[in-house]
Length: 352
Image (cartoon, rainbow, N blue to C red; front, side, top):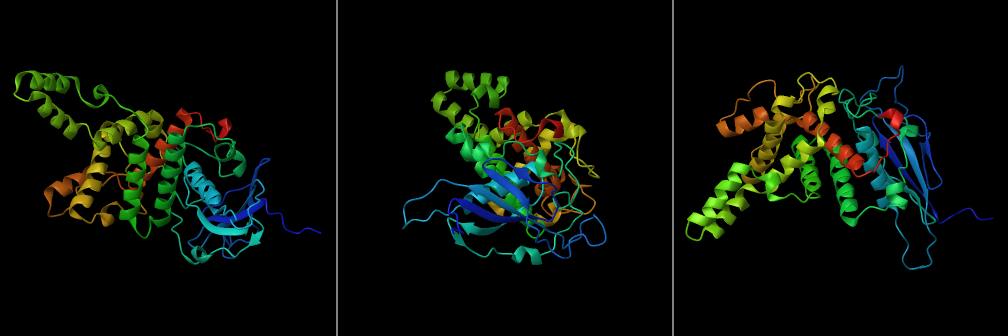
């Protein structure tokens, strides 16, 4: 009797939240592992700091013939875990494979001993409001299409894999290392912006283009001077800002997560620019900003007032920049809209 099928792969994931139901297709199954933390939601449905629900990912792969090289499919589980984090807007952790290419192993359950604040939306049992997805695996749609039947370009694939990874990693460390988590969200947006091929007119105002044309014609060595000026104003920050402004629509501001001080539409462009400036300030000077942007129980998306710091320029940036909670919502919304715009639809229509 054969007990092991080397084509069946199984991994364990978990979340401080709770997702009901199962996901089942011909290639992929996600279901409750029935090995939940015994402290999980005792006495009611509300999560507590020790709450964590575990699930098993099961998928089938092609047979392998090389007895020397044994495929490791943990990367596939990590990819699915990161997708789930973006789709639900919740923290998900991958604990390792329990069955891989016919071999068994023990997962790493160390995260089950860590506490997560259930008041933060990415740890809670509440669905996100702006892009709604019921906390049920049946709300997913064609999750395996990107993994098994991928018809997208190599550039698109690389972008999606990277941005979902940075977003998911950010949620995992947000409570302990908010500054690093914030920078990972900025990086996700930078990667997303690299997908688009913007023209000069997209990124530079018309009057500035006219001025540069005069510089080229009227000044000695004008072409070189105009080119240098363009390099200064046509940079990563411009693409970063343009991408976000193109992906964020009115629904983002109408259907928020009921935050006490939400990101405001009329100030949104300056908010986005300040987020990038905060990243640049840290990169160039090492200015610590973690205490100002870290997740707070009163759920601020922007500062309640002007931070009191000795560096006046730094204070202005902090006052305008989104907090971690504000930036996290922006990044998730942008990723999901980017997927939707490229017809990678993974959410059932009746749940959107």
